[in-house]
Image 1 (tube, one colour):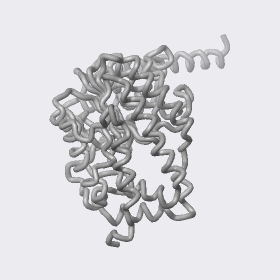
Image 2 (image 1 turned 180 degrees about the horizontal axis):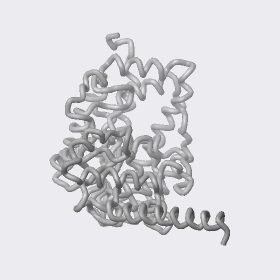
Image 3 (image 1 turned 30 degrees about the vertical axis):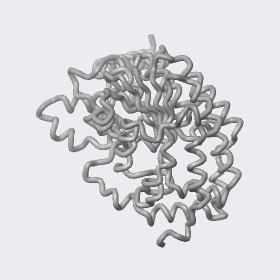
Length: 371
């Protein structure tokens, strides 16, 4: 055998050995806890909820699934559990479509939870890529098929995370590694599941959520140059089709699971912006809710909540960082409303809450707001 052939063979063998060592390390440490809950090594969690959720579904003990978008991302699992008397797993994903949410929920429902709390809005039912063409959601990790397991075990990036977690488990190194563990250096910087995408206890909500910011967002949304964005993704026929596939079909397949579905308390300015700058979009919002509420009223295992009419919250612009995102204090209000059964849509009058919202939107005057 020639010298070059020997060198090539050594290189191939060395590469294969390193790859197998990385796979073994990832299997033993298991950063995502995809195979087993963390026991030997410290549990660490990622801010990337689309990836992390695949591990949470497998590692957490839960009877309730909490799903949603950025409107639900900052909720603390401990608050959900305490207020509602459940053992929850939070699987909310920022900017997620109904297709992503339904796929992740279906994976979680394989664990046979009793309840799903699902924050929805009309925009999540927009057209979105097929799951297998969604570059942000690692679908094979949820399926745990050969492709998903192989991509996880043979990932060099995941091996780096495994080494970091391994280093953190060594007592003399733990303080140093903990100080260096940030979202910049590693993908798994969080040591408590309750802290995943939650706001820090010392977070200054008054700086992030106030009437000035809400009004600034309203002004941007209604600017003629930008107002076209209000209509982006709002296609009534597509929304109805996606609602049927992603919500109705999932509910119908799980008749023994209780679904608490809620529309979040957007600020009144969201709807006023549509009223003033994109009335056709507002009509789609109304028409879609009529369809969705009537369809959901047909299920005995569904309760629909419409928090958009909660004017004690939605008219107080100090609760918002823009026209839709509310403060952590409102997170707690929403949980209490769910616990108390407030703002439940009557299945015998499924559009009554919409009529009350319409009345608020029609009479609201922005010039009454102190600038």
